[in-house]
Length: 203
Image (tube, rainbow, N blue to C red; front, side, top):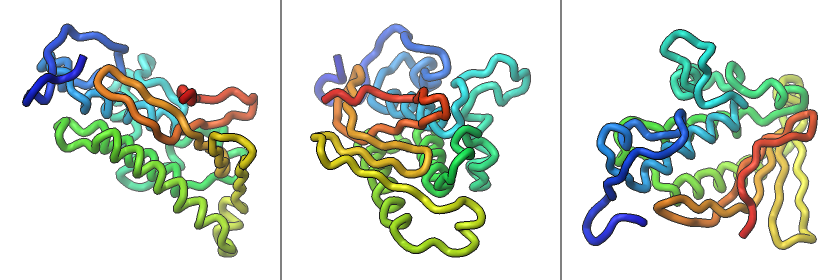
């Protein structure tokens, strides 16, 4: 059930998974679409770093993935937090950096300063296709030495588009949350053992 009339939120009892709950929702009991944006931002950070949302083994203030990843992403040093399994093969660091930075924008403290889910979808899609266009160009000597050549595979025989860029695959998927539903691109990080972090891709 979503907001009614001119209301931008609904009031409800706090429900959800620790680590993904928007602090603004926990303090106000007001549920809005921006709460979903916060949760999705946490997921984006997890896709980059392959870490739990909350690491109870950390005793300092950086036990949450947001505070742990923020310093590196603000310095554009995504290589400091990226999933090491993605580094076993050439990995497009600019793509991973953009994903991480978008994740941080989704979890800013003021809900109305966050992008909408539609804006998140569009930015992810633009990142995919800009990276796709970039890797089709001849890489420089330095980039070949640093990260190697990139790969791209497109399956044109299915109704769902699939593009694999380095260690990251993006595929059409369907997101349905309490307050909204939309079609977008999913992000799936593949590991060496063929396990993956995936989202529902059923239409």
